[in-house]
Length: 386
Image (cartoon, rainbow, N blue to C red; front, side, top):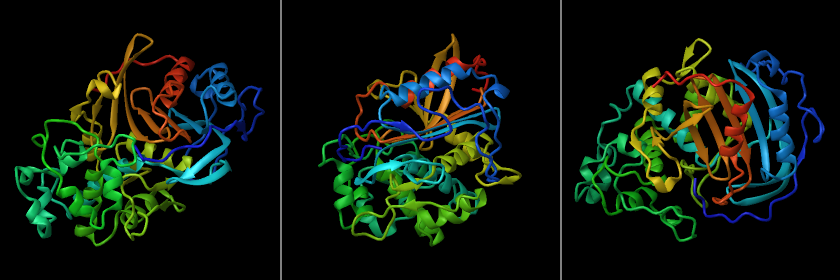
């Protein structure tokens, strides 16, 4: 999520979908593409178009800067889909001004982590991995020289929940631990050699290196790198046929923690899959218990993460909020630059949005603000799921 890439000046935005910037959202249904996503209208699901118009107008004015897409999926239907033109990057490489659409790929950044988590769940179901409590060094016996000082207690669960206890700092400066890992000739060795600074399972610390270890576990147990595995067992069963996974510079392995590129519609498919407890249509792709465990709070987040009452699951963020004086719990796949898949199971709502505000952590008019604003368009249900 915290890639060390500086973004150029924020470009002006213009809408390129079904309505002019100053007009109301198009009352027509989003286009049905026979891709497994049902479509409907805002009216059908009781969402107020004037609220959606206000959000779109604010995007066009630059209030929500460099927004690239916004999709609303409510009551099992895609009811709003809009794309914008704006400057974008591919893992730091400037793409210039891009006219985004339902077919254009976009950096997922750390949304990639949630995909890796799904792959681990599938590999466990296949019997390739014993379970979330299997010890990490079971898979890295060739790195046993680093199995010291309590690191032998590390489990897959600790990697998933960012509670490995390994020394790690992913703050933005270019010499952070993530950047050092990417430059290392031996990524696995670099990660496993980190000092243990807290007991595994006790302290949350954001660590993309643990996602790299998860991807390497997939490679070592299945013979497929994480991208090949995801394509065969996750993407293709959902009809996701167009994707990319950027490799580390000068290396042949995918950048598991941040390198995936998908379209916004395919991001939505992943959200639908998890909202439906791992099912796509009648096919169980990700085990139901894995989805439930992924969405369960594995550890509370520190206050510094600016997520009051927040928690972290299996590479998913968990936000507990009060909206319209009612408790609302949202699970989210989160990526640098403001890439988001918000899943509110109780309100049957999924919000997908992409943007190009990479490393701009202090922007308040961001995806979170849009997400909260969209709740003004309907009556919120009491959270009774947790």
